[in-house]
Every structure is written in structure tokens, then in C-alpha cells.
Image (cartoon, rainbow, N blue to C red; front, side, top):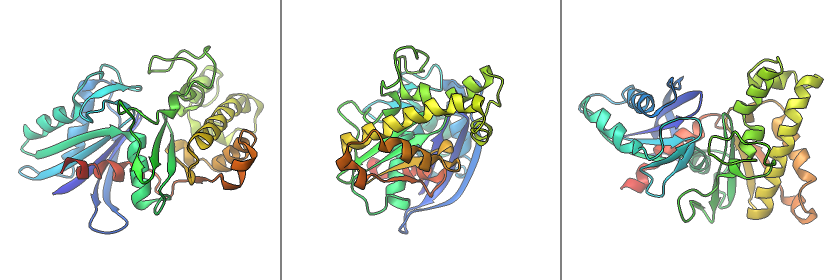
Length: 303
């Protein structure tokens, strides 16, 4: 049976087939497509099914694990809320994708999980966290997310929604636009989506890569520096709460040249002195593969 992982983002969806017969697990083939427009339930179901069909043929049996940008209910079958997609609250996404594939002759079993949790699983199997028992993956992209592994196990919490560090209220109640319905959240202060909105409103290039490259300019620095400070406070707060072996940055923003070093330097001043010698901030070496590998690994929970 093929094990297929999907990493659903706000701008793109990446899917691939993963080989778990070797160690570390290896992504054999992957494809990336634009996220559906509009970002709503029915286009998402269709896009996910269509991507799976690029790897599985009619009459074939497969597993499809999906990492989602938002809150997943404890049953791991139902969407609680996707912060970058509308009309998805309560959506039984796995079952909907299974039905769509069955209509096209593919026998699939599907499961869903938070995308940052998937990235944490992937890093532990094939990335910077191999051999670690206690670590955090912080995903920086369209949104801000986290996956926590403690004692070698993914932390999900009482209601399946643990590690939503992008929704830590670190930034003041004047920020009220977060798609989760809360206020003052790290995601609204520091995600690529929100940085690009502020850049556009200021007449600057509305993409993070261009904004980062011109960060020395005062008008760009005025947008980027508060976001970096918010992220540094978040990283320091995660570190003193969990005492991880490492915090690993993943997602599109994390690959910006010099970002990890800048965040590490800023986070130091927020850390108590006893934590500083042990504080380790890394950048994922898997690029966008971690969440795909982790999503595909969800088949183990379905056995």
C-alpha cells in the first residue's frame, strides 16, 4: 500500500509518496500545486483528492495523511477550524476525501492532523530531531504553528489542540484579525501572510522573500523588526515552558538567509540565565518535506 502525505498550506499544497521501509524514511516523489481558490471546503476536498490521484491509480489501495493549517478535533477525523480556509468548521475532511477517491476507483484510507504536528513527526523520523526525545518544531509560513514532542511522543493535549503556539496571546489586544477568532496572537504579529499585508499597505513588495531582502531599509525594518521580536518572545516562552533539546524552525519563512541567527540572538535576552547554555535553535534540513513525511506516517495510527 502506498503511503501518501499531503501538506496543506495557505498558498500551496505539497503531496508525496514516502518509503518507510528504510531508516530514515525517504520521500520518493513529490508535487506541489497552488492552494485552491477560493479557500473553502469543497475546493479543498477536490484539490486533495486530485493530488492523491497523481500518485495512486484506479483500483489501487493507498493511505493519505493530511497535515492541515489549523485546529483538528481530538478524533483526528474532523476539522475544528482552519485559519486560512473558510467554511471548514466541522468538516469530516478525511471521510470526504475517501468518498471522492472511491468515486474514482481508488480505495483510500485518509487521516488528518495539524500540519505542525506532522512536521514534528517528520523531523523526528528523517530530519534535525532524529534521536531526540524532547523537541519543538516551529513552523513559520502563511501562519505560525508548532509541534511538540515530549518523552518521544507527540503532545496533543486533552482536546487534541495542544501546541497552537501561533495563538499565544503575546502581542496585545489591538491585534484582532486572527482567523481563529482570538486577539493579540503571535500569528497575526509575525506570519508571512500578515507581514505581506502590512508591506502591501505600506507600498512595499507584498511577498516575504522580497521584504526580507530589503530589511536594511527603514521602511522594511519597521515591519520586520516587531515581527522578529514577537517570534523571539514566543521562542523564549516555549523554551522556558518545555525545556526542549532544540527548537527547530520549519516552513517557508524559516529558509530566509540569516533568520535563525537573528531570532536566536533576540531570544537570548528573554531567557533566564540558566537556560542560555542549553538553548538550541535549528533550521530544518528537510525544507518542505518534513510535514509530508509526518503526514504519511499517520498510517501507523490507523493500523
